[in-house]
Length: 376
RNA sequence: UCCUCCGUAGCUCAGCUGGUCAGAGCGCCUGACUGUUAAUCAGGAUGUCGUUGGUUCAAAUCCAACCGGAGGAG
Image 1 (cartoon, rainbow, N blue to C red):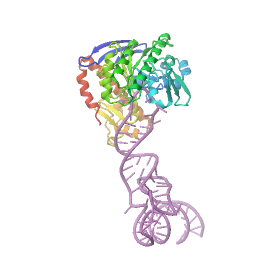
Image 2: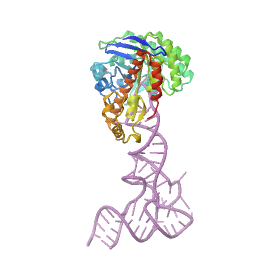
Image 3: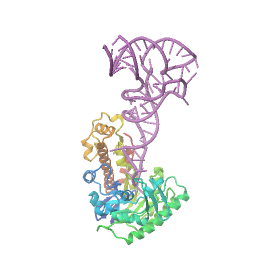
Image 4: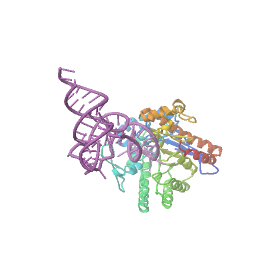
């Protein structure tokens, strides 16, 4: 993997760049659709590629390890072949599941013991075993096992948790460097900054993560309940410590506004379930603000879905029709809304790149953010 | 003509040994959702309990008549 910065915004930390992988280039800043179990929910790979123009998508190690499991994944020749997606893939390690499935796991120095949410069976994830599984899945970028601490976390807990994540990271990096990819393409290993909402911890963590000299770095443990102000503050602090010449990935974020602010603070990569999940639940993101298509006000609105939208669904379907589909609980609703929202997110970062290249990002961002937060 | 059963929220119904009995599910309206245990979750509105009388301190609940519906017997 290679990262090259093209242009730095004069008034913010925003920058454009290119990540080169063996499965093609990624233009940054980028948003990465989430495809947890080898599928971006409700979206065909063809739509993902042709309509949404996704450059890279996510998979999840915990979920793919449990199902279909490493045997199937290995025989399939890795996730790219299995799901027939030949562009880049990034896999999360299961660190988020340490947080979201906290009642089903036990953390030790060694790793995390999970009881499967599918059949209750017990499994041990260690920094090393996660690398093994991620080798088998074969993503271009693979994440280190971390603990995503809950919010709020008291200082003592946050400190111990961050230290544990660092110890795991050391082991994970060592193991990663001793092992080889399985399918002939290179893989990059990204460590993850933790530290909860404590500045000192965040700085120490970012310094430790930077010292590992990996090809890219991630910021985790944010957008777990803290205010946006705190999130931006932590992100700003961390991004000033993490190396300039490597991509920075803010995990799990966020709203369109979060992403633009994150870009302004020097972040290059984002992922979030929001466009797909909220889409399934009837929420559409647009340049003018957010639409809850279930609202009665759209019942007889036969205008197109989104006049400023660039995906084919935006002009192909009407608001009244999508409202009907959502209310009737039709699968097609999730597909249409998912395509629209993901295409919007990819448009959002594409515009951001253009504005950075033109040197007008900051002004543009401040104007756009005002509208993005509105409720239509 | 007679007999039986039924009439409670928009829908399907629970409550009917009289006193937190005005309820549920669905629908409707609204909100939440940030490295997906989530086509999920949460909240809200709505009723002259068929009608009219009666018994009682108190009736959706007991009695009578009537109206409407279903079934049965002739």
